[in-house]
Image 1: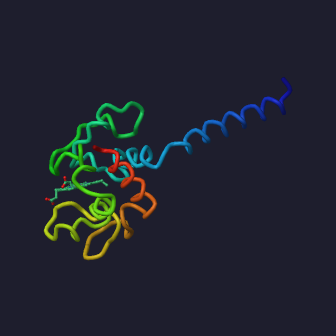
Image 2: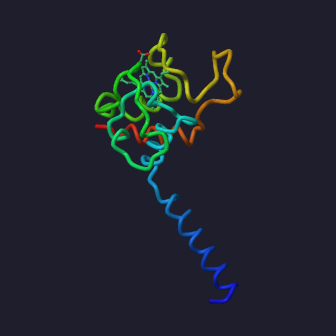
Image 3: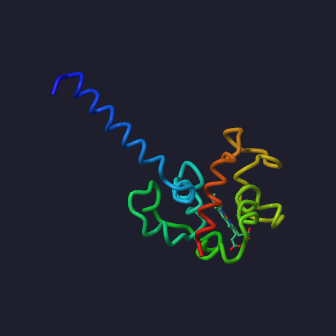
Length: 134
Ligand code: HEC
């Protein structure tokens, strides 16, 4: 194989591997955001059984907290709008909640960096993931 062909082949492999990452469903991406300690980090406060058993997901292997209720079966307790609200700003559902708002900085005084923890797109994906927890 000539140098050019080899480079082309390597490029194609790279393209194919990034292509696979993009084919993950919103719910699958949402679960990854929930497990990721730099993103949702939901597992620091919540038990999520499907993540405990997941292989190859960043953060999933770590210990899960129980500060908040288990999220198993949460989709049977709330509809999609409510699930999104919990993540966006739980205070609108429960004013004195100890769950931090992920989609807004409103009413927070010491957030750092000065932007919400999750983007609206990430919140959509987390909502899609929560909707699968039956
Ligand atoms: C600092 C701890 C903490 C983190 C981090 C956290 N939560 Fe919560 N969450 C709570 C607590 C505590 C409650 C219970 C509501 C209350 O009493 O304040 C709750 C409640 C919920 C509920 C409602 C559960 C039910 O059965 O009523 C959902 C859904 C939820 N959280 C999703 C999430 C998701 C998704 C994330 C990550 C993006 C997350 N939480 C991150 C603490 C947390």
